[in-house]
Length: 488
Image: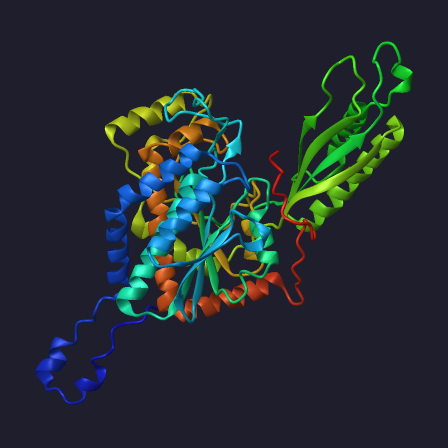
């Protein structure tokens, strides 16, 4: 239930019957008026936010290296009156922007890191952009911009209506494997926040109720002895042999882990020349599962495989934890509220040129894609889907504060994340239109929370029940400092 305009009630006691007749018609909820205004305001600012998103798309900065992207978003918030604290939690590109006073405190998450190896032009054919090796294959240029847009709109409504409440926009770097939000959680930056709102680019419009996989990652390093590979191979001890032995053991282990576990690796260093026995090699591993306890168990087994590989090859090993994230704790109270607002906002409608772009993208996917028109639809809530696929450091936030998110169609329907097609869409109007769906939905949801504290109370009760009595947050990455050079 939303608060309604009730200032006239005492006067009714002394007014005549004609006045009573005039008041029989129920006034529309005040929230509806402000939601309509929020949508109109954001539409008027479309060009401004599009420019920010496309500039960040051009920057395509990797995790913990997002200096220009972070600075651009911070400046947009400062220009609108937010107090911005930068370099929080020991991360130069992280920030917290705050506006307002008192309760409730609503947080909005913003991401802006790109992915390596996904350079792409904003065209419907695979063609890298000159002078750039990375790309926004997960649409974080749109993510950060929409979150800032929603925060600024809420600030303007607080000013206009003299509302009590505080908006915090969190600039969270390095979601792609760097676990940036975990360090913000660990530093206590979400203490005292009543609810957190987020979103993610996608090929459809839906409220996020599918959860996420817990994840732990590390770089395993092996140290051997160099020697001439032909003249003195017996004098060498190959670190690359150790990496290959470890990988072989882990690959055999796949038969003996839960079927919904995921293990990925890449060899990041394997020597420089075939005729030199490599004295250093490194392999980068991810472990995922819907339950964080299972992730920890599998990770420990992988660590033992590394120890065995070193023993068998006469090398030594160590490893560095790079990232670790919790699974995603869904809050159905907030999800129901967000879904109502997403339906109010609606999906994305393509122009004729955008339809042509979309069909060309779909033609190159290599599989049957959903209808292009589905970008204009809002998918119904499916709380029983059981789909839990990717990982996100939003998971750690969700175990700290009641959290809710949505996905918006910033990519052509059928487009997978982390693809050149996603990068291409994110540099066009298709991407920025979907971005504004997200900005509006987050703003409307926050309006409900600012106006109706009972929704927050229900969400908090569900949150406490879902975490369970005696829950204690322990970050999966331990007490390590932020891995600022994990992309090097």
